[in-house]
Length: 83
Image (tube, rainbow, N blue to C red; front, side, top):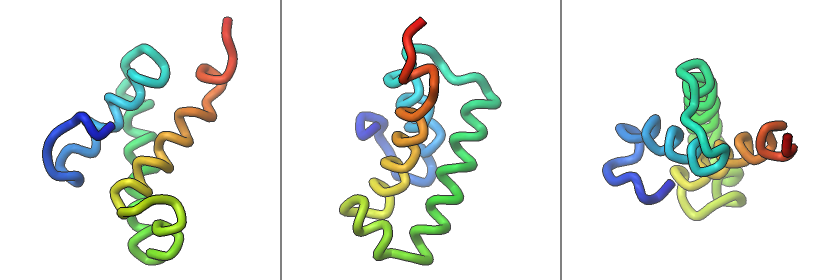
């Protein structure tokens, strides 16, 4: 997700869309991308309020948010199971 250039808040959706493709090998639907974006925004707010939690997960707040989003993707049934 680091290969999407630009400042973090402005390109969060692009980073999440890229992570989705890299993880599931297909583009996210608008609904899926919206849900992942909402999750990332909630984590951003949470980690701003509790910087020690963010620091335990990653070096920066941005990395902690992206790590949390990546964990969501990696725990999806469509990632874990093969059909």
